[in-house]
Length: 134
Image 1 (tube, rainbow, N blue to C red):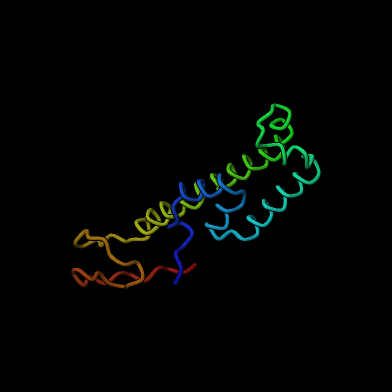
Image 2 (cartoon, rainbow, N blue to C red):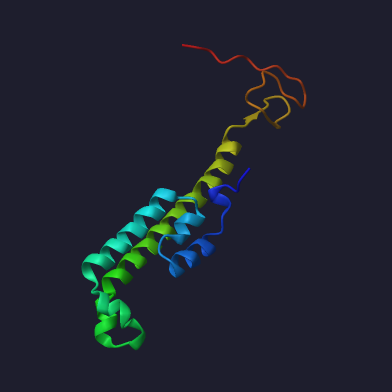
């Protein structure tokens, strides 16, 4: 089975996203977001950036650099979105660990943690009263 999204490296996703807009989202297997950011970057480049500016970007003139600011803004927003996604995906792992701990039941006889699905303590075999239904 493939690697879960939460197990992926956030720094690698950000690095890939910095190299090519949308590539970090592809790494996280967020296909729609990746396509959306790529389409947005292409659309912004097509509407707001003159073709001459893209061709003369190697000359590093100030006017050429200022002309591609909208494209750089889209790339920065994509990286920000990628950062937020990786932070959100790391939180459920911590929440699951606390939920697993909160779901345990302490035996009234021996004081050890037991499985709440069992009707007895697996350590000392004390039977638990079934929960009362209202």
